[in-house]
Length: 294
Ligand SMILES: Nc1nc2c(ncn2[C@@H]2O[C@H](COP(=O)(O)OP(=O)(O)OP(=O)(O)O)[C@@H](O)[C@H]2O)c(=O)[nH]1
Ligand SMILES: [Mg+2]
Image (cartoon, rainbow, N blue to C red; front, top):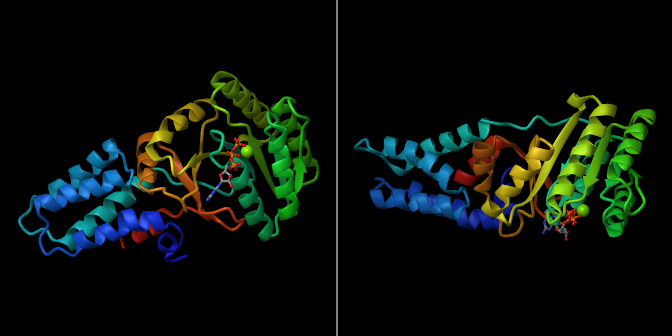
């Protein structure tokens, strides 16, 4: 998948990668260049605390008399990889619970995961546990048809945990390989939503072994730092194993991955880069850094 950033995440390429190039070409890195580096990191949405953390290491290295752009490149690359190595995603669990604020991309991401697994010949079941909006179930039924996988639905307003319960039964009885669970995401009823999520997790854990379950949080990549407080809220109700950054084909800047891993200790699982079923890319940390920096 070489060239993924350049090909699909053009905004990241423009905002970060292309600007690094000029710095890395310098024979000597000046103080002004380091200021420029800091500016690029902040503009790339790495956020203040993590930018500071990165700059500390860089400034230390830059204090030696000969410090070139290529030295800078090596040390930045190492630093960014070390940050992402703090928490790596352990995927491949059969049951995936999707949580996230409304509009962040849960439903469409589920369709993409369903497609990915179905392509690998796996038997996929979707649980439409967003019973809050009738349209949510309809949307998911259409996706399931397109992907060609099974779906469990509930009546509008029905307890979503009941849908999850039935989905777990089907999953076990009919020997599905993968179960993908959609949930509602409206934050304006925060307390209800979190209680509802906690109940779903309880039901899920009662019927499926905990080590079979992964919880993924979708974050709208275009919202950047603004979306980080959401991560905290969801993490509290349903401990999150990985983040899927969505809509990265938009104005997402990509630096957010470093803040998510370092400040929240949550691994990045994947990115989505469009509305087609194929627009999902599992996250490979070293590859991402190499492309970002390269
Ligand atoms: N361009 C682009 N649009 C996306 C991507 N992922 C999702 N979208 C769009 O974002 C909008 C919201 O996506 P949904 O999947 O419905 O979000 P949701 O989290 O299920 O939202 P609720 O059901 O309201 O909680 C839709 O219009 C999607 O088509 C992406 O990777 N790129
Ligand atoms: Mg939805």
